[in-house]
Each structure stands twice: as C-alpha cells, then as structure tokens.
Image: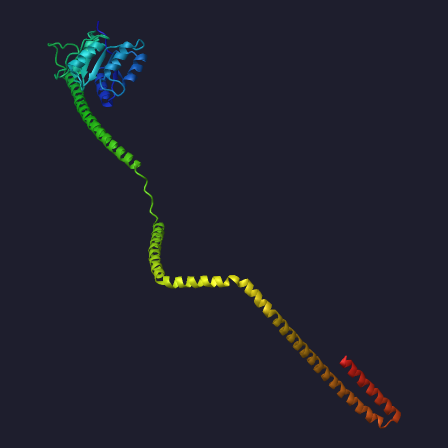
Length: 371
C-alpha cells in the first residue's frame, strides 16, 4: 500500500548540496529537515520520524555507510528508508550498501527524474526500511514536473487548457533552471574543494619545512651582541700585553748582552767587596779604640771651651758693671759739683758733712756694683 512521503531528512556536510536537494523536495510538497554530519543525523532520528533519509557518503565525523550502520543498529533511532545521496556510485558501493541495509542510491547532483523514481519507489513500498533494493540507475531523460506528476491523466477529447499548459511549462522551466544552476554550483564546489585540499596539502608541506627550519634555528646558539667599546678595550689590552711581551723579550736579550759585557768588571767589584767585608769584620773593635783615643782629647777641648765661655761671660759682666759704675760716678760728680756750689755760701761744717755724705754714697755704690 502506497504511503505518501511528507517529511524527509538530509544528512550532508555540504550546505549547497543540502539546499539544492531541499528545494527539489519542497517543490514536491515535502517538509525537509537538514543536518551537517552523521552524529547530528543520529540525534535527529532519536527524536523525529521522517519518511525518508538522504545520506551523504563523505562527511568529516563518519562516512554515510557508518552513519547508516549505527542508525539501523540503534534501537532508539527511527529507521526510515535510507538513500545514499552521493557522487560516488559504484558497484562496490552498492554491494556494501546492500550488506548494511541501505535502501537505494541517488546520484549527486541528481536529476528530477531520478529523484521522482526514488520517491515513487519509497511511496509504493519497494524501498522498505532496512531493505537492500537498490535504486535504479539514474538516467538523463527529462523528469516530469511537479505539476505534471500531480495532475490526473488528460482526457484526449477535452479541450486544451492553454493557461494550465503555460503554468506547467513555467514550473518545469523554473525547476529545470534551478537544477542546472545547482548542478553547476555543485560542480564548482567540488572543484573548489579539490583546489582547497591541494592548497592545504601544499601549505602543510610548507608548514613542515618552516617547522624544520625553525627547529634548526632554535638549536643554533643564540648570537651575542657585539659591544664595540668592550671589543676595543680588549684589543687594546691584547696589544699592550703583546707589546710588553715583545719589550720584555728585547729587554731580557739586552740585559743578557750587557751582563756578558760587564761580567769582568762585576767580578772585580765582587772581589773588592769581599775584601772590604773581611776588613770591616772587626769594625766594632776599631770603633771602640777610636772612642778610647778621642775621649780624653774631647774632654780637654770641652774644658777649654767652657773656661773660655766663662771668662767671656765674666768679662762681659764686668764690662757691663763698669759702665754702670762709670755712669753713676758721673752722676755723683754732678751732684757733688752742685753741692759744692751750694756749700760756698754755707758753713764749713755743712760742706764737710756734704762731702762725707758724697764719699759714703760713692763707696756704697762701688761695693754694690762689685758684689
């Protein structure tokens, strides 16, 4: 008994392929859900019950065969007919699909007639869930339009409805245009994917080469910055050390030559120094003899010098006192003269007294000076 197809699930990692197939299914009144990988398809079938699944072959997480195997083996998953929607359609792939329980194949990009054949086979029960009845090989014949598929058989005697024919032709042209456009877009996508994959491979090779170069560079010792001032100082020190070494060698050579030239004189000087050393060996005894001989003479000379100094001091003292005495005698004489003048007018006794006083004063002064 025929079961109309109302819902479908498309499992494909290519957004363009999903959109292309979903448009064709939507034009036939089928509600479409889409996911991008096999794991998402499993989750969707655990929660929903579509009438058909279109499964892509090449996907990033798992391929279409593995995803179909897991769906059919999972008791929690709904198991509608699974159609492989792929550009890889070989006899080996069909045998593998039959072993798994995949219901059929639909070539990518598909034709309208191939899609309609698959839908009719599923609706009529020829493609049952888990059955291995492969879909017929797609043909290039023009597919009937959605309006023509749904329209009842035409009555040859009925008048021709030009408006209906025009509408059917317009729908067919639109579907065919969309199909052609999506077909070329799909081809372009495949070419771009192939080019991108080639570029990725080349970039991977370049990345490996760069990584190898970086590894080699990382193993090299880190270059040290050259300090010109430090280098100049070090070169200067090396030059000085070298110059000192050369000068030292020259000096040693010159010293050796000079020593060889002065050797006789040096030997004579050494001999004389040895003789002098022997003669000076009794130097303390000789010094004691000289001291013993010179000491009495030094004592006599010191006594003479002391006597001379004493006499000179006494003479100087006597001379100084004599000068003082002379000065005082002159003063006394002056006083005496004055007194004599005053005595002439006085008595003789007074004169005698004054003369005695003067004489006594002079005598006292002389004694004081002498003492």
